[in-house]
Length: 197
Ligand code: TYD
Image (cartoon, rainbow, N blue to C red):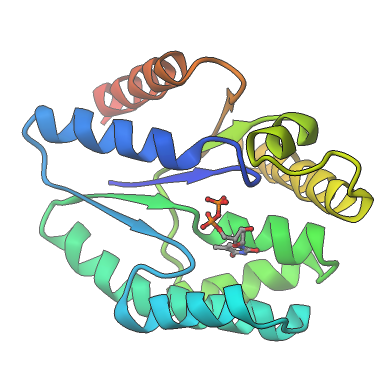
């Protein structure tokens, strides 16, 4: 099973990824966690570039896709041996950030994602929804940075749009709830889905 967590910066993805990893391992499952951008040796180098350099939106997208393509090879082999893979961001981040956020046609981003991943899609995606004010406050960033506010608002609306289109895969969780409550919702949802399989 491939499980992804998505959300704007400060939504609390990383906390939830760690809680879920612990829970599934306690249940005796084999679990690996990877983050994007990054996750592989080359991917982590690409992450460094993305963090350090200012690149134009198209170049940014291609770097992200290169990192993703490397990671997907690894993910496929984990999935083939029955390991549960949890990803902190995946394909939907590019549609939300580079597509809806930076203004690249979201359907083009989707096509490029498909090319980079060979069509690999998450079985379930937990989208942790928080308002931009909450996100910026959690990150300790000033609320009045208009540019960042406006950008994150577009990204958030983008995620909500993807969720509307991908109702079966996407689970929207209120990211303002306490972390253990969010974790409980995630676990209940997974159990529900596992029972259906
Ligand atoms: P991340 O490490 O998840 O940051 P955080 O923990 O603060 O959410 O992601 C780093 C940044 O990379 C984040 O601002 C989102 C961005 N990003 C994209 O713009 N597109 C993508 O496809 C991915 C994977 C990340």
